[in-house]
Length: 127
Image (cartoon, rainbow, N blue to C red; front, side):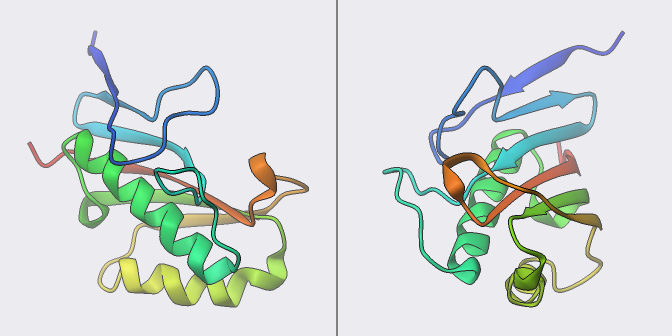
């Protein structure tokens, strides 16, 4: 049986509920959905700014687990409004310029803190 390890970092906002920022099991790092909050709890206004912040938080959690955006194999993007897809996608592409991971994008009725986007990821550890 593979042992799982909780991934936690001060480089991303703490979880808002009873869940971990991430979990590492074997060579995989699972990053919980990351809201677009900075460390002070501030949420930017636009979908582009929120996408940047969510991906910065995903990156921090993956790195704490020994992985990175470069080793991501799957992401899920939750959007409050699918009309924001193009703007989100433009920012997202800058974080995955080569060989992007598999991805699903889902429109949802509402997200915590009424944000516009939440992003989660699975990556392979580099160590």
